[in-house]
Amino acid sequence: MLRYLLGVFVLLHGWVHVWYIVLARRWVEYRPEMGWDGQSWLLSGALGDAALRGLATVVYALSAVAFTVAAIGVFTAAGWWRTLVLTAAAISTLAILVFWDGGSSSIVQKGLVGLVVNVVLIVGVLLSW
Image (tube, rainbow, N blue to C red; front, side, top):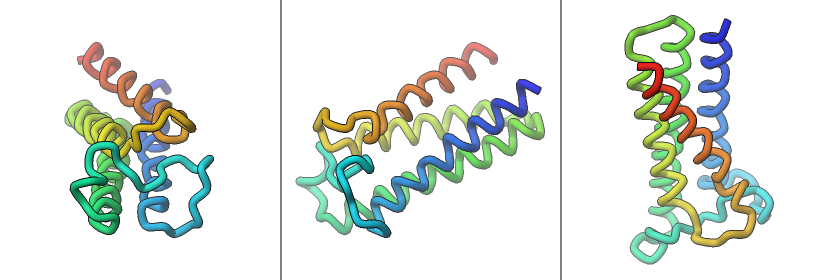
């Protein structure tokens, strides 16, 4: 039972990344309470808006896919699921840190909860190995 709960948790965490793809692609009109504003404290000066959003789309999509496949691994008790959860959480953490706009307003919507979830997943996987 615990394995299935973990699998659902990993799957849902992965699917949250799709929201950041929606924001990166501007498929909805942005409002501050939505989270990411399309800026990066690290890359906005170096990349143009289109390149930054394109990179964000790729990285968040990679995270979503990696977490989804990791969840399948959890559900099926595949031997590789831990490695993929660690990889997905590392990619997601990198994305949150790189694409953060540097501001402290709406920090929860900008990825703080996701960052905490990633750390919990990483620690949990490492302790279960």
